[in-house]
Length: 310
Ligand code: ADP
Ligand code: MG
Image (cartoon, rainbow, N blue to C red; front, side):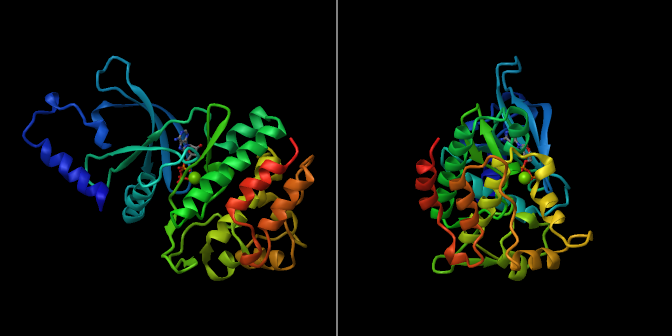
């Protein structure tokens, strides 16, 4: 694996130099843990924890701010974690969070991913606080489609597209983050079947993901529809997809994968967010078509968002 090879090259190169003489070669993407100063926690999800750090080799506060992601449990899925880093490293697009490097003291175990720091954090946190104008929401939606179209052109499926995984740079540009569940679809094949039992964001899943574990470009489009729903409801926690799906149950009971499948098969879908433009609602509904082939591709959605009156 390239990350581990780079790490061992870095370690070999520095074996005969005393630590005080070594300045890390950040050009190669290797960061030295000694110079990473923790500032604050930025957030955590199911698998990872992200911390804001100052990378300050000169030790005079002149360094740069970076976001550092580590596995939450040290004994977590190391192979999956290295894969996440490899995927992010291979991507280069203005609507995808930028890889800066990695950092480790103890091989794979303590491996940390260094990314650009996005001061506004996730849309899930930003939207309820700042409630930008709808014209801005349309721009965000279009940028997500641009990033996803690029990701799909590289034959990756994201599998965890949701407002909590979309980050905001200044106030105008969004970037897709969290490639922890991303998988590559081999050329010629059109979907990826998961066999492992992962902790999954089921309320963002298409019906075929829930029924048959089939993840495809089209299931990312379904998840985008749910993300669009979140964006146009300003990520209001009272309107969240888990809350709304639970309200659809005929009698209050604990939601299960089976119940969610039966709701979706009865054509139940998330409601139209308040004041959401009709054109946007129609896009959501097309993303939630039962048949994966009926859902639009991101390339056509980029155009559609350009056509919605601002
Ligand atoms: P997990 O795999 O555990 O879900 P994420 O990569 O989604 O981890 O990160 C968790 C949270 O940390 C995000 O929802 C976001 O709030 C914050 N975060 C992640 N990356 C960055 C970043 N580059 N800049 C600022 N905040 C970030
Ligand atoms: Mg996440």
